[in-house]
Length: 506
Picture 1 (tube, rainbow, N blue to C red):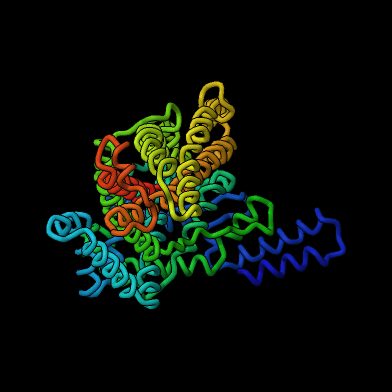
Picture 2 (picture 1 turned 180 degrees about the vertical axis):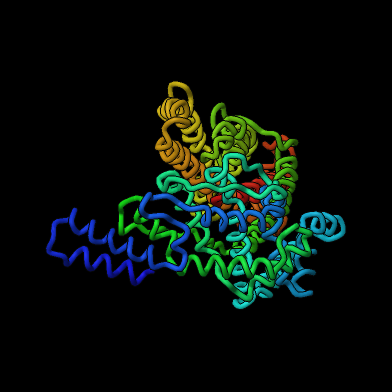
């Protein structure tokens, strides 16, 4: 059939006649091929009608596959088929790995296994699962699954609607009364036959059909027998190889170059399933990691502030970021960290550390001016961040540049998808600025903390090496100066650890 079509194309291109005349010549050639075809009984060219013999061909198919149609039209049962097919090609090791990676199995293991150890186990088992599917096994499973998809789309073809055009009295699934088929004008079957050609080309004789029907039997699918199916496939192949349906469609549509584009399933079932399983396990690992992270944050925040629920900003908050998250947009990823930072500066740095630094840096007799200057610079870098943090927050207010832009874009985003990139860009820049502020604060506090640690050690030394008048400083401090510095270092160290959770990109 393909060679015949090429001959027609070359004849059409190289001919010297007018296009209309060329078309007539090609149609006459099509007519000759129909008349000489072994299935010429399907079509009466003189009256351009399809004959009852074609209806009988479709009726035999319809009668054979009818019992399985109900099952194949159940979406839930079809959804399970992919896993059933893949499971059919699993060995014992693979099945055990799948069992251990099932959500309920992971939840049970989580009750008796330390989170860190469970994460290691899950990663190893995920690698084992992927490795058990070699190239040949993947190809065989995919081939079997795609044959099932081809089977499904063939079974779902509406043979009854097509047959009803040959016999208006036909009733669905009633095979006790022989049909009385009549001829049908060709133009009324063009769409039906075209759709049939698209899906029937995906069916070919193959030894892999044995695997398919073994799975059908295991699933108790009321399918046809393998022997019946092989006969049906051979008949389909014979009709397809004859080219009769393509030829009649060319003649009916008066388009001698008409040809169908087959719908041949080609889904990488194993790869899709493995990717889904991998994502499922990785999501669980992320859940464990996130739970650990949140627990550590809560402990550190409670040690520092007495509570982990800290909100000092008005606009850049986790709560305000929810509206974007719910629309699958960028959200405020560093809101918690920046709120903690503002609270730490205003409630601790600007008060306790400010007072302590006044005593140490102004009244203290340092043996090294560079050391005292470095500590002073670190302290002032932190306090200067307050203004920048508030400025960032205010840009998200109703009158702020970012707030007005985001509010307007959010109103349009459902009908104008270009606003998605715009919103994400604005929020992304805000998050980047918040991250820079957090990182800058952490770096400055590390410097301050380093010097507080050195001063704590120096206070206990005799003779002192950094500050010479510790005794005098003790008189002006409302609490013992040595313990006060040690407490300040401890709190700043806790806060630096807290900021490490927010200084990197999420």
